Length: 232
Image (cartoon, rainbow, N blue to C red):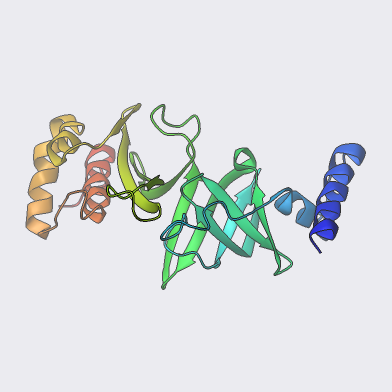
């Protein structure tokens, strides 16, 4: 079965690179779309002895949507490896495939009744490489970058275990900076920081790394003030 899978991937790649096949002016061909989306390499477990897993939210496949080189796909089974920054798609309900991150514009993971939207942040912010979740997008933008690393128990008597880390970034006025503190976050808003802080206090919203939704709400308020859309 594995040999058949590898042969299928080689054949798929040969078809794309050898024939240079692409859709015409009308609807793209379904076979071409499948080849375009699932072009990649087979995923293999890398950490069988580690405690936990390397994935975002869950190690089960989630249903989501992907935009690859401007083409949108919906209802795709996938999971996101935040240890290696790989998006893994389940092809034909059987084969896990790591797709090329450089060809992936964005994706949405649907989990526990919520939609989590990620974009390819390459070239957007010098401090980030790879996928980042969009917490707010408007005149300014708030991004979350999730990673996992393997750590060893200090006693050296247990297996490696995954440790998750999240960094938040604020893109405003042509700059992108990591949010290292709530004060630093407000300082990036310049002359509007006092108005935004007052609004947040009125709404009784917590703004911190423990409550990142507050970053999004504060950024939205800042955008409204800058664009003149604020009615309060």
